[in-house]
Length: 87
Length: 160
Image (tube, rainbow over all chains, first blue to last red):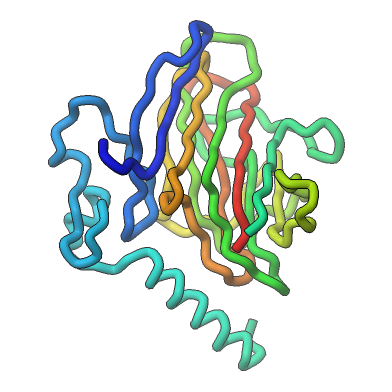
């Protein structure tokens, strides 16, 4: 996979038994393991709005809500509640 | 952006490793933002395995988001660069009960044979990220239909 978002190794008594590329869903942050020679349709897809790889669950949702935006929303809510002394 | 390591195999002050059951009960490792000075947590390296008698069983590993940490054994994470300051993130290990898990928020899930060890490394930008809000973070949990021994885990993370 080009520009993989990560890499996974399985070891057993014989050493490295299996290796696989992974990518991290740009919408929900889930790690998706790219199995060798798997059908690209099973992996998820590319979001045309944020131009990042996303997992099958997020493909089905059909909207672009990047993880960075979600984090910013949560942090803004936290800062607001904190400023009001509510947390 | 200091980097830290935490493992549930520490011999001093790390509590007792918990036996595995068929459901997610405890948590091997938990990371939670500080309640007073929260920082973003970025997990970029996960190493998992078992330290029981070898046998062929499946083990499911899960990292989920939490909004509240476990109450048991808090163990300080180690800075990878000794020049870095102590982490602000609260790290818990070998918890018999897990914290408050956000429903449907598992960001890492893999099934591994008990005899195998597994490592996942994120490329820059592919980390698991928790928001800089009070007590938000991740927990590494495990369950197995056949294995009832203990397991080991190591997480490397970055504070931002």
